[in-house]
Length: 106
Image (cartoon, rainbow, N blue to C red; front, side, top):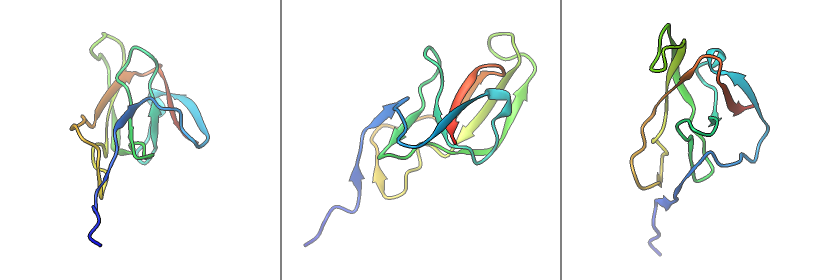
């Protein structure tokens, strides 16, 4: 009669998406894009309950990032998944070298 209003899911990093995706250089990321994956060796993109994070705000271009190369920093709506409990807190902050290919939803 009284059900659990929160669906519990586990985070899955760089999971294959059940929708079309494509790769673009990080420098072309824009607000509103759905982030699907970064290449191996970079911060994993977490999906939860079949929902991937969306970029909020405009990505910020940095002339010399942590690797000394031009980089892009952006924030996603992660870990906000309304009505769902995904467990551990996840960081919504990402960065990548500007030329790194990032997988986003088509």
